[in-house]
Image (tube, rainbow, N blue to C red):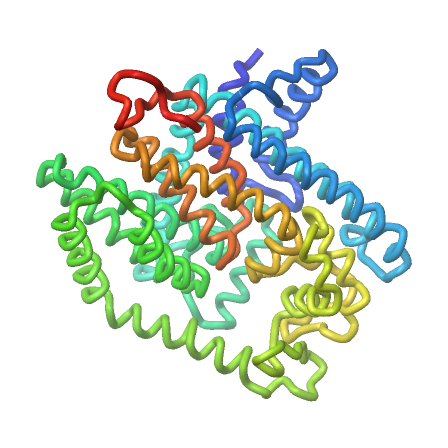
Length: 465
């Protein structure tokens, strides 16, 4: 029998590697399904210890998971009753969608439980596969950069040949060379890179004074390389994430001396100045022109592919159908923002709007719809209530960091900055591999399982949570 910790590590390692998937089957799903079976066995044997008595942070996470499962089931059932008659592909039929998404959320929450469990017992079980997966992604990316200049074979997006060929044909039509490593679409990979950059940068910032010259050069080279990779994904999401994460995290950070902050800001300036021609070009073509010519222009008005939404205060704005229909749903039924629809139920509730907002990407009227815009996805999946639970938990983490951060280990600091980065991305850009609850669970584990002394209490008493 393979020890459970190995399965947990393999599941974490495979989670961002969408390359290892064929259709709806992936290495992650197979491993997470095994963990779900183990968890079900524990429940059958009345072993509820993973739900209670594990620490104050974990209690909030359990509340978030229970709330979202209840909402998902309730709105999923209502969706089957009220929208079951609309034309659908098999995968987007309300009943099929409810079953598939309940299974998906069960896999996510099963891994969440094991991340927390091993985060307390043996942190390396969780941390090491993340580091190895990131290194693998960077190595493959290095090959992709070389392949662009030397016309070497491309790295396919998936193991599935047909899906990879579609992606390659699209790249050829557009005349661009975008890297995606083993993380699937370039926009997903770019956000992983932005989170990695932010976490490594602030780890570097905290321990800058203790590092030797060779270590400083190593980190500086790694940061430059990651920025170069983000630029070569040519992803709007990556550029937005990078531009938001650094200033916002700088504002939250504590324990970095003023002189070190000045040096690090200087380092960032040098990096961006050295890459400025590429950065300026991408910002112009992938952000400014894309927003002005695709979203704010009227060139799609009156065409079959038009998907214009009357946005209060902005007028008619052109969207992809996967964003237009959820936005119209939210504007039409704003009360849904309170509870959310539950994970994956958006596709069912937008069915009445699809024939009128097909979108310039031509998704049709019967397919699965998931918003690209992160704030739409967060609001409609979790609602104000669910998001408020996450924000309250982050606020507790933030207060703990501001009070005891000076005593944090390298792993605790890196975890806090990774969690902060993922949370920001969850409301600004979209990346399905960066599941916020996993980062919350690991950070909760390494705080619930540690003993940090209060600065004002000397040797007496531990840090309150």
